[in-house]
Length: 138
Ligand SMILES: *[C@@H]1O[C@H](CO)[C@@H](O)[C@H](O)[C@H]1NC(C)=O
Ligand SMILES: *[C@@H]1O[C@H](CO)[C@@H](O)[C@H](O)[C@H]1NC(C)=O
Image 1 (cartoon, rainbow, N blue to C red):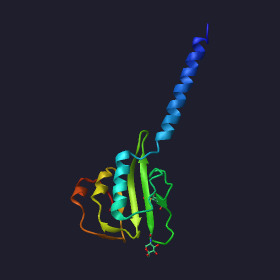
Image 2: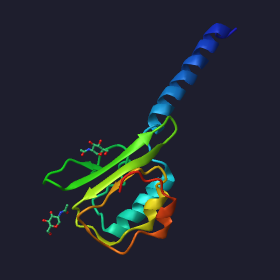
Image 3: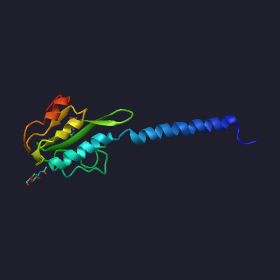
Image 4: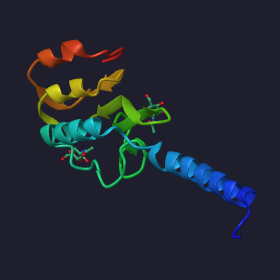
């Protein structure tokens, strides 16, 4: 006869636990794919070229959070993560030399609560799509 049933059961439990733990840890920090797509759109529209999509936007790496080098300049994106995925909750792009129209695609970030685009050269009015947003601070 082969391995005892107890040993097999223990091995199974160990593998199941490890998969759950590491599988969970591996995906817990990722931004929801629809929001990544929206950020790419927004980056293009604003001319925000230093956002690095090789890194997950919620990781804080790759220029997603830049400490202000010059006073009043800020580029900071923060997320809220649950066990299954992350959502963008705050974007601050102050004095980032951004140009163009105010991107309607911000409305696709449905968990966004704080948006600060002060001291850039954006034109146009607030996009009608923004009516659906749940912003608490602008
Ligand atoms: C980025 O923004 C968050 C949310 O507003 C804030 O708590 C955090 O201190 C900011 N980080 C930096 C480096 O400015
Ligand atoms: C904005 O443009 C000025 C002048 O071209 C430059 O010195 C500055 O570094 C730029 N700021 C950012 C955040 O790119």
